[in-house]
Length: 289
Image (cartoon, rainbow, N blue to C red; front, side):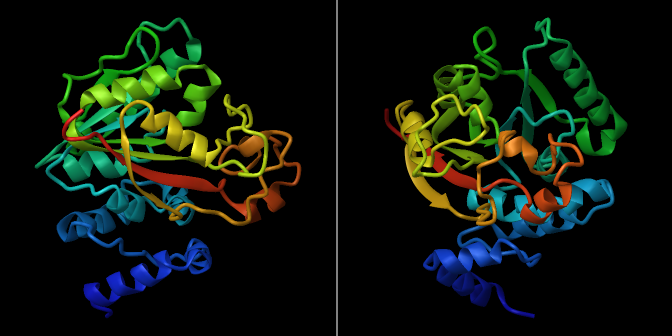
């Protein structure tokens, strides 16, 4: 078995070679991220293979790289972590909630329960039903409201160690809510706290769509937007890069799995492409404003 030091050296080489890193994106082998916490990494490895995750969720690991992504963000088992809009299925919740259950705290920031939207009302109930189905895993999860414009104070200010957002930024841009939402995240984080953002990456040569109508965001624009809220960019990674994504579909990124908005039309082609190309960005709230 390859020792951790050798694996770390391998990853360092990959980080220096974007082509190799993109090739690694299509393997099932877990990439060890330099600087990760060994105990947390081992716990995530165990949870990723746990039967409490459905086969459908586990099948997406090859595209979403949850262990590597969370390790890149510097997660530790004793942190207070808030996930923004975990979705009705709680894909990352299945890993984060049990990981943080004993030594840390997992906070799920969902939509405003005062909403009149049937989608929001049904989605909140679906998520809460999921939590209730496994109290041994989820009974310590805190559910809060975070949605512009009327629910922007989900937690006590300066109380969170790590905030993660997976495919949320493009939705905030679509509804003109991005500055307000990012500002709320800045207020929630402790000084020195980390914000991890993953979202669909637009073609850098294409005109910048500031509303991300097709689900793709210009990476440089995303970085500037978040830095304008006061954050410092620590590092960017191609852990979730997908060179097969041409980003030119009539239905945008939603033509690809897992949404398949085109139904059965060209489904095999979209399955072969996989989930959309995504940037992975790590920011920090400065110790001093």
